[in-house]
Image (cartoon, rainbow, N blue to C red; front, side, top):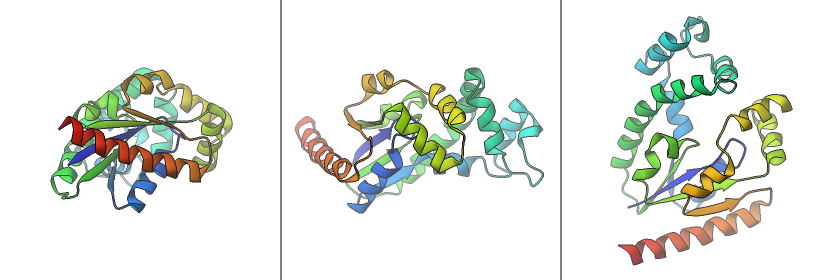
Length: 200
């Protein structure tokens, strides 16, 4: 089985790339979905978050106030590091469970922090999806209902393009044309399979 890590900053289009892969019969595990699952009410990760950041970030119904916590961690690098150190190990355990239950030839692992968390080290290849800052900000505003200033703050809190370029086997610049993006994704699938067969 080929494990393809898909990463990049918020608003770059990882989800769109994952959707293209799924449309071609390749299963993709979304680490953002796993991240939501591991912090559901009653989960150990949520208790650790409450202990670290305070009960103020837990809603009266026992669920995580994601927007409020996001406002904190995307303006405080140390807080973001602490949050990631809590959630990454739970996400990794869930990811391993998904991979073990999959029988296909290629599986995608979509996550903004797969390099930092060490997940990328377990992948055969890493695909970085990048985009211009203005494009990213517009996408984040439309998707999350944030003001442009908040979107830019989120982008600034994340890794620069150079970080992804250093760690990626493949890179796609996704600045808007879906047809071009699909063509590039298909080309990378072909290169990846050929490279895998050559290397192994």
